[in-house]
Image 1 (tube, rainbow, N blue to C red):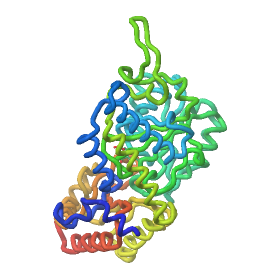
Image 2 (image 1 turned 90 degrees about the horizontal axis):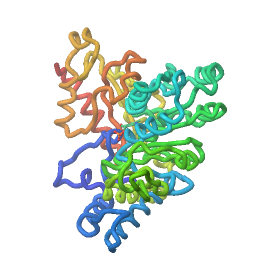
Image 3 (image 1 turned 30 degrees about the vertical axis):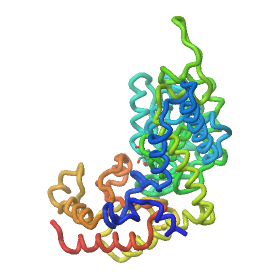
Image 4 (image 1 turned 180 degrees about the horizontal axis):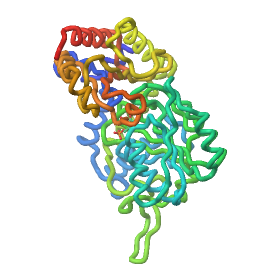
Length: 429
Ligand SMILES: Cc1ncc(COP(=O)(O)O)c(C=O)c1O
């Protein structure tokens, strides 16, 4: 079944374009199935018109598709209604949106925003920017040596500061360690003091079932391009009770129903938060992507099968390095605790961007390994993966990251493992 899904991705299955690419960079962006590519093409070939505004058929139809895409995402996340789904450009925009709306609304000098040590920079810097106008503190839930979040530390923080903790914003699945955080437990503790809870689901929505009701988060963000949808499309989910009251962070067309020299009235949800002409083709295709993914998940027997498939590949890959001392995996070795990403270091090599000058001077150049893998047509990452505080916490320099998507198979993983061994054992400098 997974093999037939793989065939739906032209960039992977077609030999005319990039012959035989081994795509292991799905945490950065996923490849797109034909149905998503076709939807974008169809929109521009036959359906292009601005939404909400035109009284003519093409515009009315585009508006209808835009609404349907919101409905598809609402169903995908099990939200109450499309009114709780705001289309953004990506997860980063969703997090900045929250900092600039709920952050501004809730935070006063002396308050606290809690994130964790394994956040993507977008869930750190968006709050740091807000600190320039409000003097709140950012606290980091420590990552324990076993790569889990320190819930006891958070419980103690809540006991000490109670309602001063206004927002908790956490990553669901780490884009480096591949671990899934126990966000349900942490959010429950947070909600005991009425803290607003945010889930960064950028890495989880394509890998596990994400149900906003089960998780019980107040807001959630994800990127369309990491869930087999187009770049420039993303989602912010937020409970309606907040959206009703929040002041948008952007004003302009689409988000108003009436404007005079003396003021304006808001449009209905969710359009109140979608100022300006959006990425219409991207949003419509995102709706197609999540519908497509839901169907494929069903066809393989549910989300458990997706997780199992990915964890089998991770396990298989890690086993290739079981007794190899130069391979330093960054994350739990138990593949059952891993989702999507495999980051690692290679003893004696330092990768691009390393901050430790002595390592840079003494080690071999990691770029030589990267160049070797690139020649082998492997798509992967090297660096801090926008999670520098996490690397700092463990004293780990830039890592190599292989990450998986629904289309990967054993051959990909064997090929990548063998290529890596070949690169290191050939003694590159
Ligand atoms: C966990 C996590 N959060 C946020 C982001 C930011 O996503 P985007 O660049 O699509 O905004 C990423 C991207 O890799 C991510 O992995």
